[in-house]
Length: 372
Image 1 (spheres, rainbow, N blue to C red):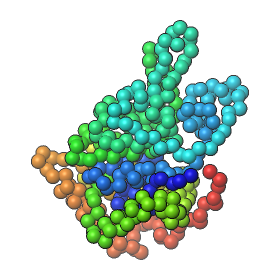
Image 2 (tube, rainbow, N blue to C red):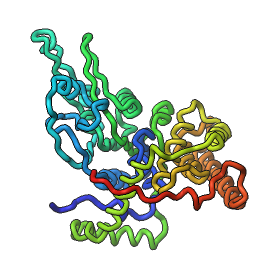
Image 3 (cartoon, rainbow, N blue to C red):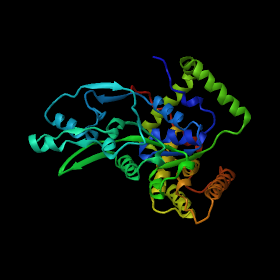
């Protein structure tokens, strides 16, 4: 089969974007990532490339919701009912789903529909799956998310947060799991999302085109090479792709074991309080992203650096904007503050406060590889 997807590891620069995507791949519970940037900055390329990195998943072969045969608690109503009847569910492997949600999508197309006529006439509960069903245990990509109807965006974010899609019509309900990596992209020149919706995205990245001439030349070279020979280009990058895929899989296994201290929580709370962030969603997101970053680097305890890298992705879209205030000024202040904190940490390395762990003791042995 000819490989037609540009390799994730071949994307030049855009490190924040790649970091945000990888952290969500490790822990979809972070709440997705919103990528804001001008045209031609590899937003959609990165999302598709990430999905191609993820391992195959075991599914109930004849289930439209990609139910996990090894986890009854995360099955749809139909699969649970079949298990209760004593059926043996057929199992298959399939690539991690990548589902593209069109801007014109309606509510019924997203969440699915219940056939009320069949329910009334025949007493049968018939559910027609929607986009959320197809995206379960995969990656849901929404291009130009700012052009979607606000109500549809709200539905997506609700499902991403709860991990389940519940459809109710005329006293009849149906539910199925909806665990997916949510990636939204947009061009701010075409309008922004409402603040309430912005806050619901776990992480956000603002990206611009690469201005360094050498880097721009490298982008051209790689793109031309890919267009001329997609399979050959992929083979060239296969070692890096397989290594990153392996690290993501191992980080997923390691994630439940990553610890944190009260001091870490205080650091996170102090950061969000300093920037006057409303609510507590940002605090939880920073903690989850910091744990995912520690797991990715092979550690079982989060560090101050993990917290700062997570804050860099979780805070920008949650900063309060005063009337006539330029958002870029706020972002500059945030970046300067985070850099200042990082410099202070580096200066105190080796003589930190009680409770710090020697970085050399944080590294763990590689988790033994398992068949996925």
